[in-house]
Length: 109
Image (tube, rainbow, N blue to C red; front, side, top):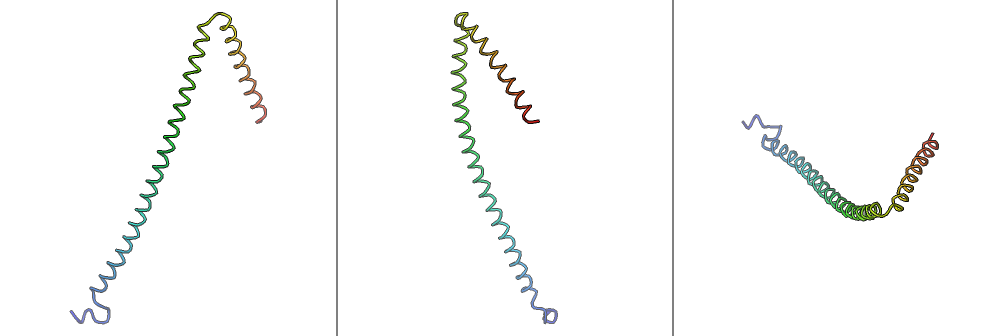
């Protein structure tokens, strides 16, 4: 067996060198995975903060809309003159919307 290993180094040395190379390769991959896991965790935290901010914005918009709906329903339940004014305002808003839409579509051509 000593003749077989002569001049080429021992088999153990070759296997040891291969193991060290593979261990270094594995350590590099583990380090890369650890870095990716940290980046994913940080991104998830950022997204959670963003969603919490959106939640508070939606709550404030809900409060604003519910107040507007209350005022609108109060106006509708009130006398006939208010209903007539509400009808005129609604028609005016619809006409203004269509005019703006028409103007914007003509400008973009």
